[in-house]
Amino acid sequence: MARSDRLFRLLQALRTLPSPVTAARLAEETGVSLRSLYRDIDSLRAAGAVIDGERGFGYRLTEDIALPPQTFTQLEIEALVLGLAEVQHMGEPALAAAAGAVLSKVTATLPDRLQRQALHAASQVYRFERRDPPITDVGLLREACWQERAVVIGYVDAGQQRTDRQVLPLAIVYLERMLVLLAWCCLRQDFRKFRVDRIADIRITEESFRPRRVPMLRDFVDFLNAGAPEASKMTLSGR
Amino acid sequence: MARSDRLFRLLQALRTLPSPVTAARLAEETGVSLRSLYRDIDSLRAAGAVIDGERGFGYRLTEDIALPPQTFTQLEIEALVLGLAEVQHMGEPALAAAAGAVLSKVTATLPDRLQRQALHAASQVYRFERRDPPITDVGLLREACWQERAVVIGYVDAGQQRTDRQVLPLAIVYLERMLVLLAWCCLRQDFRKFRVDRIADIRITEESFRPRRVPMLRDFVDFLNAGAPEASKMTLSGR
DNA sequence: AAGCCTACTGACGGAAAATGGCAGTTGGCC
DNA sequence: GGCCAACTGCCATTTTCCGTCAGTAGGCTT
Image (cartoon, rainbow over all chains, first blue to last red; front, top):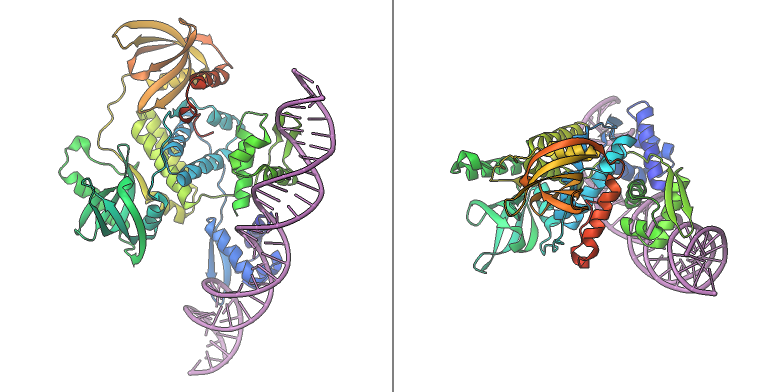
């Protein structure tokens, strides 16, 4: 309540006051202590604003936030609603919630007519089966991917054999109905696919492999495609 | 932080759920107790929204407001990229292209950092099989749904029998891997499901059933769910 | 090399707000 | 009169927020 309002005023101050502006000035402007101001700046940055801060100098707003209103064609709205609905159904709870939030945020910027279209899209996703929540914490794996940190996983293979191994997580992939972790296996020194539902436990280590995730992922896909016939090559999602 | 996000979702729920909507429903939607919900409604009203509340009836949003700017979290970006990638893979060419367009438009408005995140999302969709293009023109069916015009379809049933029938198209649904048209069959005077891949040809007629599509669709879903056990009820995509 | 300016971080304790539960009131409708 | 659902007040608990303080760090001037 009070807080979000203050963040709004802080952003306004950054926009209007002559830059660079010191933290002390902004703190005074928003009526808050210096410490809290730094926290507020963090919040704005977390929300996507790009704020330069140089020691001994001050702050400068480099990139503003606010999703500008968008327009979409009717077909594009169908695609958006359909895709996000799909994620709401198949994703783990946190991801499903995020899909809902995206839909809300995007449609909020739409003019009335398009909002109604979004609401009554002709393409829909219905599911009979309730997906049973995966035992594995997908969120943790995703976190590891983002941070490019090695993880130690307890993996149960097809023969019920459990092994603990350290891997470099590259991506989480929906591969023909199956949730799969693509990773570099440090034990075997090779690319491996791990079915997420067979990962018994996960521990994120301190070991970072930044910034090698993206190129390694590319290599992995190339490697998988090397032997495959042209018609059944993997493609990276959408790009 | 969490609160302002919730208020946003509440507003969105008020916008999208069929009005009037009860406090209990909204509380469930935003994952909060009834008591807190009343407080949240107060907050929105304090922020300027005009929300009708009649005892024994429910709420209705009379005048909308805009809340402070929002951006996407990393997880929300994952959801967006994943969902649209899915559509790019499973949709017919026109729809797939639309999904790509949405992704471009949305990411174009994002700050650099988030754009990079979108590009290198940890969740991805890979497909081996190339989808064989459906014989049926899904676009035409969608068009008929949008325009709420009756169509005459040539349908080949399980026993290879072909019949021509006039139907009122309600929605196109991805139902367990299968593309299905939900429609009112004028011949049988009943709700029917038609597998899109068995629709041999389509002709849009002049006959309009506007504005009955949305209520009819609701009836259809209720009808399907009437006998089903609680655990396997259909849900309308995402809302 | 020594200050100085300012961004930034961590820890800690107290203050304030948010939250949920409960018991009750109220107005409209069957 | 009973039911429904909006609304209110109160209170214990939990969570979040906030200011203070102590310290680190980069760039600048002297």
